[in-house]
Image (cartoon, rainbow, N blue to C red; front, side):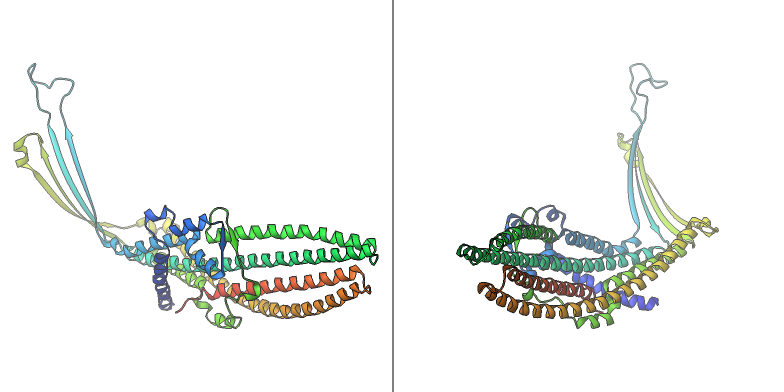
Length: 465
């Protein structure tokens, strides 16, 4: 098991090297640059109206999103720790300089004549200490830094996939809001046209007053729905702007329509993803977390063994700093020490060390259960996505047939109304049926694309071996 675990942990290291290249190409990680806005950020924030395509939105979220920038900084910090991991074998070195002056400053020294003065004794010393820990836990600490770097890289991959999914969904919601507004505007134009015709027919004596009032009422009742749709669009626009890292008040202009947007994944890829779920970033990170826990458990067990240490100390001093001949009598000394410590209390039953080991063992068992649950959850999600995608495709075909039939019914109702063979209610019902069918198609097309976004979210987290 441990051999296969080591083999599987190699791939995240390759991913981390790619992530770091991606990080350095997107944002400078020097402290001086982090506190200031980039030229791109300033230009984005200064603009009030921004034309935005889906590809541009995905590019912006990887560069400007605050969570993404914070994750890149954390990855860089983990890389520094990993690069300096072997420094744990280096000795620690410290230096201390001290000096003192002694004498009677208030009372006169004993035996000195009145009016005479004496020089206060002074001394100056320097001490250098070097210590080298020889404990067996250093190797475990070094290994843990490798696990930390791999985990940070996988966290970045998971965050990137999540932000791309959220951006796609927010963009699709904004496009749908635009189409909802256009549908409602068209409904208002139809109602206004119908009112104009009804008014002319009423004045000519071909329509009743009830039909005239009904046509006017219909125009008035459609306006609040348009205002609500415009308000909803504004909320969705602000949500997308915050995901992309825009600050202040901006207007995002999307010119695409849902039927022109291709899905980020193909439905057939679901079966391929199911066969490679073991390479999913979430499961890879679970493997690394378990490897870290096992490393900590082995470290805790090794702490029962004796710990060795070595130290070297050198010191020098001079007395009478202000006397020239004292500097010719400098004295120094050196000492070498070896230490051995044995944690006797760790061997006692119910000791703190034993409880710590038991806690780590519980954590390993819990992590194994969570990994199995995560794998099952991913399998269930893929099965549900396949079912949803097939459902939405079938529903869209049904919606399209309903639109075709509704248009034919509307043409017949309009012609019959103009010829006096149908009332205004029949015409309104036909227009409402077409509006409902078109709105259903837009909603189901959005649901279909959202399901593909969720599928792409899983696929983008499946790492290459």
